[in-house]
Length: 397
Ligand code: NDP
Image (cartoon, rainbow, N blue to C red):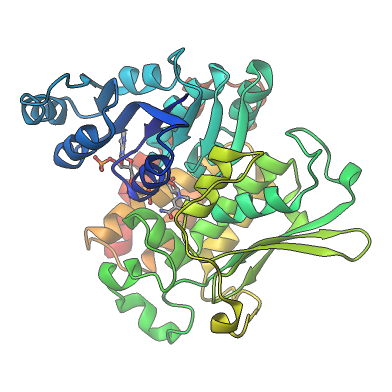
């Protein structure tokens, strides 16, 4: 039996992961589940999946969970706090870790899983954006293996030859370019002058994917594609210039790899995260995910168009940060998390997200990070959040 920890089990990816795992009870068992504050959701998951441990990042939520589980025969041990999140990612009885906490909050437990040599099913793209060098080094040093969960990176992984592994140069595989597809989000056709007035509800109504609120807003600004560009650079050891973004409104082709001989390989599927999750759980085998078969005659057509830079300024900011490297992606990510939370709380307009991120990047001098420890990166993250907070008030004014 393969033991699994699901970090962020109450979220969109966490729920999809438990759906897939629940279809294969002979193969997998859940060792630990984690969440932040959703004690009710966690209690339901504990009754259904019977983990050994349940962790709530928030201690008050952990107390509530203990109460909710008090009548359960053989309830899981309930733990609280950051250290507990890290410890359940590194337990000896855990083989696979699904890293699906949202934002930089997922970094330390994800790193702990890599350092413990686990199979890392990586959804938490922010951890690669903030600490790509450290995370990839930890994977290499400890015999861990990353299986990308982001549908685009999972698609690229599937389109690379079987002999591909971390650190293998794309050139040696004949790869010319990686093409990441983007749906364009809910505002791909909205008149530009209306963007300043769109609401959080509209921004979270993604046309093709059902996702958590933060990544939904990131998809609407296309910061998500920018973070994915940085993620792809680390995962596949590629320069930003080698990665092209293509708007593909149907979200059926999840990404493509272009080879030297002119061949372009694509991975297609219905837009349902259970496909990449099942791929990463079963790799190198295949298993049932519960996703309906793709009906290409119903899809009928596949459209593509270039990105409009004036509609998606966040993508340009992310591209600049990817090229600059060093602390720039850390600052970009921290400022974006602050700005998205402020937009969701209706403190700033949708179009202010790019303004806040752009200003924060300008105000903090970039530094090189070679040889840095995680604490130094987290210091930059904290400083960038403070400055981004100050920029919120400036943008509202
Ligand atoms: P959700 O917001 O739906 O879920 C986030 C999960 O993380 C919840 O379990 C939440 O707990 C937990 N969490 C939030 N904050 C903290 C914290 N400070 N400490 C510990 N746990 C915390 O997010 P998604 O599932 O949409 O996304 C998760 C990650 O996967 C993101 O990095 C996203 O970019 C990536 N991803 C998501 C995709 C999708 O389709 N949703 C696709 C590709 C990548 P609680 O419920 O208690 O708040």
